[in-house]
Picture 1: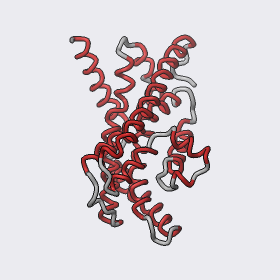
Picture 2 (picture 1 turned 60 degrees about the vertical axis):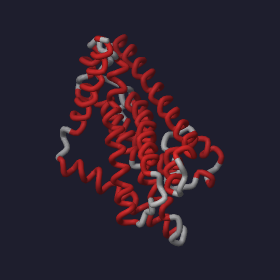
Picture 3 (picture 1 turned 30 degrees about the horizontal axis):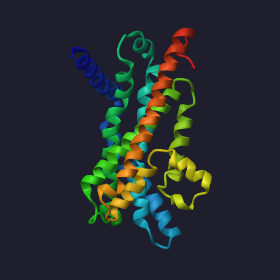
Length: 266
């Protein structure tokens, strides 16, 4: 029991400290702008563009898709910087020099971003209801809340993998931006999956967000939690797979860095 208690304490302290360190340079007004204005700008752009292309139809399609896709901001960028920031700050040798449980340290970096990402989605959906006429009157709101949390969890799993890539490359922001904007297409946020070529559909099925966005749209149309459960279970599986691959890469990097003395270099 003592070991479990210490590991849980390590998980929680690492979670809070890494999150505080990530946003320590931000003023509250800057942070709020990123959480409030950024979702609004993205939804306005794609909703108006999609509405123009479809003669004013299917506005809800773009609003819901982009609101859920906003979780990638925390899942991709936030988690990546939480993991990779140790190398940039010069604290990676201290982390690897401790006997602490690596599993708790690694996955603790994503916990606060799951909450942060879910809040971002709620804000985006609120904008959609207030300013773009999104109708959620038929929606099972608790089921939608579960969908948001699961989708954010899955996206953070991909972020953990991307964070490990930041330990072995100097161009991780380029990769992060490429992944983020690719999700705008491949996840079905702005382009129906069924209209994509077969190879793109295969890529979509291997990514987080795809099933979460589909679940949110189904719930908004009146579906129940039971109707979307298969999609959500698959979404959880995708997140766990990416998180596990990230942990394996993290462990491999520690071994190689210690062996070669390259903790602070690419």
